[in-house]
Amino acid sequence: NAGVMQNPRHLVRRRGQEARLRCSPMKGHSHVYWYRQLPEEGLKFMVYLQKENIIDESGMPKERFSAEFPKEGPSILRIQQVVRGDSAAYFCASSPPEQGGRGEQYFGPGTRLTVT
Amino acid sequence: AQSVTQPDIHITVSEGASLELRCNYSYGATPYLFWYVQSPGQGLQLLLKYFSGDTLVQGIKGFEAEFKRSQSSFNLRKPSVHWSDAAEYFCAVAVTGTASKLTFGTGTRLQVTL
Image 1: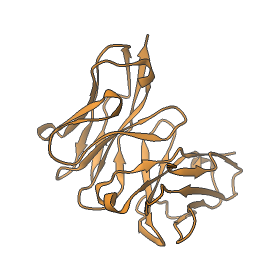
Image 2: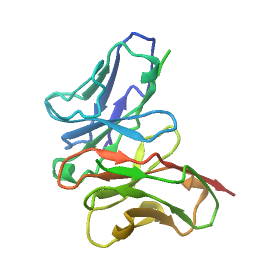
Image 3: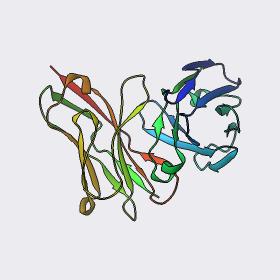
Image 4: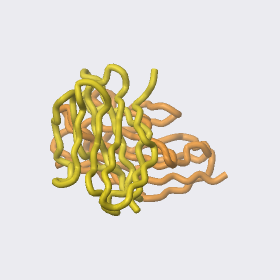
């Protein structure tokens, strides 16, 4: 019974490149959340998606960041034209439909993005 | 908007000693409350949660937490700490009645001395 999977675990990008982070939720889970953790800080909510829908993107930066959760395949967090300030750990979490309203989320191991 | 405060950035305890990590929240109603633990370089693991009912909740690894409405607190406790408990601990809240985001505190780093 695999948990939430994220890949890659580590990603290095030069300034100006694009970063694509992938998240496969737990089996049966249809809610996906993305969080960002800056060094020495807690996690900050970015976006909440269900299949083919963005439900809440109130934590997403207005530019360069986008997320999707297609009908088939993993959820993708995309960062265009990365800057050094994007260096952080990005965590994905998922929850099943019946618990979406209770907020109980299961986290993946994270992708650590380093921008050089 | 809801917020979470963890006033202790760093705590050191001796192995076998008791532990209490503080968490205070700000929200107009009773939120859903969670404690997560994060080991270095790892993701977050859910320790315990409070939705409603009994205000003392038991979690994994011998942890418990008590919800106190009058103090807007949800402190995490463990009677006897083990060296393997050294990690970062995060308190989080979710707005009730919606499928929504978690709001996290800034975390408390626990160091355990032998």
